[in-house]
Image (cartoon, rainbow, N blue to C red; front, side, top):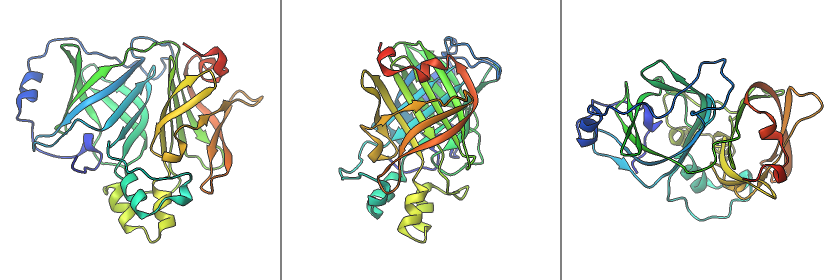
Length: 304
């Protein structure tokens, strides 16, 4: 895959290929819908989508990256990881060398709210693994032969999405703000699947790719801080919420434990410090959709 900055929102000319021609003939209804900002009820929006293909007008295509989009009532999380990650022992952030950091900077992912204006969808990004782009992420969605087709409205790209055959309830999501830092976090749960996202604390330069930011970092420590943005997906097992894939390799196969103190406006998640020590993050709950107990319920009660 040729590297791109925020691949769904990079510039280019209009689409001129077979897939773009077929899009103009589609008459199926939009496959998912997003409620307004006040909606908190689970419904047809709650789905787990997996991408099989993205194409650009210049002929580039990617059908090997692992891409998951978990959509809650309106809040969502998206993780995009190239398939050729090198095999290396990476037990903690402080262990990452320049080669590992350079590869990890190629990843993508974002979290926020899905908006719908009656014609197009916008993936509003409160968290973005790549530096902020000036172009909004807006596209049209249709069903064609059971595949959801996404076409960029302002930026030319075509993506193919497939709904995963998983339980669509319970469906819940929270938007968080870390105490003392103000950085954002998200948790989305759909049946036995969950995704978790938290922003980095070190600012990136808008308009650059993360790879370019890493290349310009004054030290390896600064480069590590640039890729310290977690977007993870996992499954709820009897033993807990187990992370399967993550932008941070040392988080994989680890358990994400979520607890709520006496104050129900707050939440705590487990984490791993840069040194490898166990730590926690304390959050204020900025917004909740669906049944909050679906996120807080003990693992033994969440098996599906």
